[in-house]
Image (cartoon, rainbow, N blue to C red; front, side):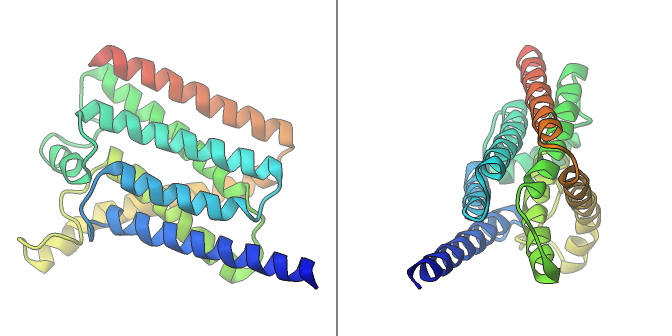
Length: 227
């Protein structure tokens, strides 16, 4: 009986952490709450912690490494623009264009490599948690969406978000189109990649994560030389 109670306690704590992290991350990433990029990353970390309580050690290591790559990629975007504030990241991209397209060429290439590395890490992050049933996949989809929104915000930068109060609602809705489309693409890639990675041997999963870490290191080197 005590073992069953302990399992229920862990499940409840895991669910609470995942919900709390999701609410925190989405609050910042949708623009409903203003604040720094690190606050959104904190929400993603809390979600990952909650997920890790339901994983074996291999899954925990994979999820932690995936989060590290994604956080590192977000850091590259912050370094590129010299700010951690989400509002400033959006504003500068609204004027100059998406991070992945703005020169100098080495900086744009660094952003593209970081985005690819983070997208690969997202697939591995999704694959780390055993998921069963519609509700489990729906929840995982929301968590993957929060990761995707972080990447889209950092590297694509929507001009207007839900939290905007000085523009007409119709203009807000129009501006959200490209943002929502980009988030849907990254989320789908993450979930689809996660499904594919699930059928791969552990050694290949580890190799893919190493590749993502190496790509992130290359991106960091490029962005450092460009600034």
